[in-house]
Amino acid sequence: MKSTLVVLVLAVAASSAAIAQTPPPYQPGMGDLMVMIVQPRHLKLGLAGQARNWDYADYAQHELEESLEAVEKHIPTWRNLDIAQLMASTVKQPLEEIEKAVKARNAAAFDAAYRQLTEACNACHRSTNLPAIVIKVPDGSAFPNQEFRVTRP
Image (cartoon, rainbow, N blue to C red):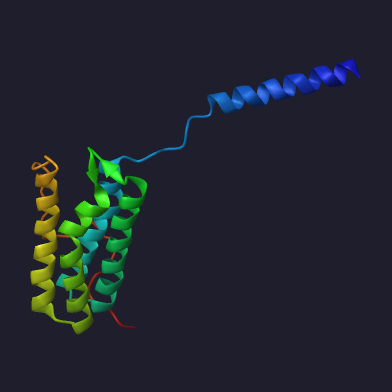
């Protein structure tokens, strides 16, 4: 009985030590989220629009909105700024214009709205004292393993 109790105490102590040594889960910061989920989706949306791949552009536009919502959820306040308010005042309207242009399959309207979205991103960066972060309309793909042109079997 005594040896069973000793084994139990040692097991509890060992599991407590293991828990204490387990690092906390990764908590991405604002820069991480922007580079990992927002910027690639902005890029893919631009490439799809340039290729006039309206089905993929529709998908990419919604993915970009979801990534921005994820940023708002995980980092609601950053540098004393309300992130939801900041997003609403900068990128909400251009994203709505992109959605309309994609649904209408209107290339000129898409191009204008995408430029407006890109400038809204840069205005947000300037307003948060990060003017060195400049986003642009893509002039090439960072995704050589993905086709953005419409292909039909």
